[in-house]
Amino acid sequence: MKDELFEQYQTLLACYLRDRREDQLYAAQQMSKWMMEQKIPPEEMVSFHAEALKSLMPDLPEDVHLSFNFLIEMMIGYGTALREHENLLNRQRELEYEIEVAVGMQQTLLPDSPPELPELDIGVISVPANRMSGDYYNFVNHDGDSIGVALSDIIGKGIPAALCMSMIKYAMDQLDHPLDPSEILRRLNTVVERNVDPSMFITMVYGVYDLNRHIFRYAAAGHEPGIYICKEDQHFEDMTTRGLVLGVTKEVQYQEYALALDPGDLIVLFSDGVTEARIDGQFLGRERLKELIRSYLHLPAQRMAETLYRNLYEMADYQLKDDQTIILIRRKE
Image 1: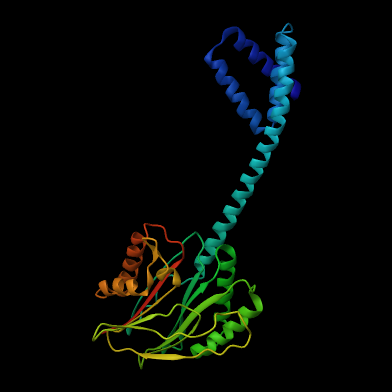
Image 2: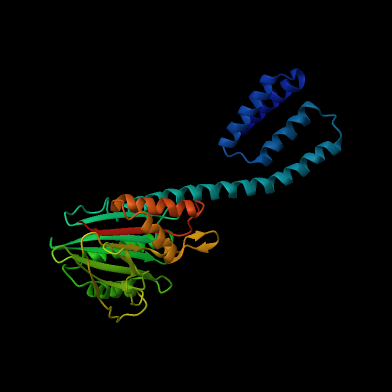
């Protein structure tokens, strides 16, 4: 095959040196593409050219022939670097495919939409800063009389965070409901402590909304405190949250808190990526977040969540550094 290829190259070179036509240059380009597809290294292409010139112009100065030896040595290093580059590109394509699969799997772990209940108006938005999110949220039906709400922030990114997310969902699916929020966190902490690398931590808030009494009981594991808004006087109150993040130590007891909601009252849960969004070089913070929330209290919960995120994204100059998750739970009037 090499002999035939050399003859073709020599013939094409001879024709071009004689006629100097554009179609011959185009034929050389096509031959070059074919040689690259056949993985013929660049030093061998230069060798073809040098040998062809020797045959076509035997009277060329010796220095010219020696210069091709010099060029061949240079092409050997170039060819090695090129092959390494191609290997890296192939590996990157494989990783891209694996990440796409992981992203798709991660999406299946999250609810398609918030639950529709006659007693509550619920809105949710969750947007990853990168392709994979470290935020996890879920809604759990507690025997029809109450609904569980989970929001978790995995300290980490990428595939490790996605694996932790799947573990949290599986562990929650195995729990027998109804359970108190503090007991749910205690059991999840045991799972995380056993199975997650010590360098990774998981914050979480879990609440249970009693649909009959309209009481929201919740417990937190190192998670950003939510905000309670009273409809009657537009009062904003930081929700009390105390508790060690999941996975630090085996035996942890989580304290439980309760809020009674009147018609129109609103609970806002969010990941720390919301308050830590960079606005003009500074964190957004809780007070500016409250100002934003106040501006959109008239909106339905889902539109409110989407509008809050869109404004945060614009204020941060479209450069959010962390995952953004907002859950709104409003008692219907």
